[in-house]
Image (cartoon, rainbow, N blue to C red):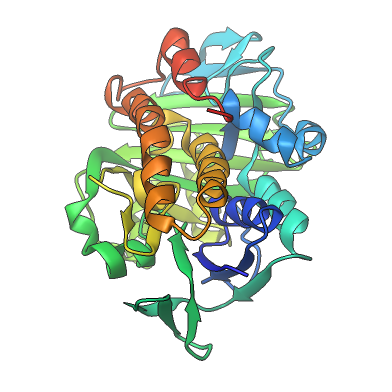
Length: 366
């Protein structure tokens, strides 16, 4: 049996684990966090990615978990409504679309539940070294004893450990897009009901939507900035200070950011690489080709990439070099189109025509 270690327990890693298990691989997933991750923004499953979750048997469950926005308001810096729509939402596009918007944590939970009985999960651990030999890759862990796997896949996000160990420093591949995004949850102190509000004040802005049957808010706050040190405490202080300066609801938003247990903040950035494989090691999703949240396509790229990579490995048994080459051949045009959604219109959402073209620019059975 061919053995595969996947680093990363978000969406991409468990999705790949699902498909590899179905193709007869023995799969282990190592995840730095102590368990299934919570928190995160609403994500979109679009176009061909819908076919992937349907083939996984998750389409109906994803539809039941989708956000059910009735519309949105755009506010001026004082909180006065200047625009309203019951047809589109900035977070997801047209409300009558077949695309599915749902909370990232819900999708992670679904994919994990689909794989937990078939896949070995190592929570609370991380890879510290990779040493490739003639017949496999010896992997050293922070906690677990060293083990050897036939293949190693990095599905561990923008700041991928596998990418750093196999390909070199992140600075070679990360391209900062000039802003930061923070996401956190809060009690629904605004009383929103299946609604979202958007506001921009100078070089900062936010979108807030009600979730969990309107019991909670999910806040996505962005601000323009050059690269900042990756210090979680310092980033949280920066966010609370910038929120406090807002003229509308700044104090309460700052308090929510300061106290949120699921607080997240990171740069808007893309990963661009000349290749996604090195020997027996390959990259998937944000680790290899993060498009940034500005594209709205990160989750779909992860799901589609997982299906394509697993299929390529299954179709070239014992020949990972050929499988990885086919994976890149199929995915690179799709990735390029989706990354361009963020870079061609960095100040706002991409046009409907561009999104429609990008999200459907690959067929699963090609």
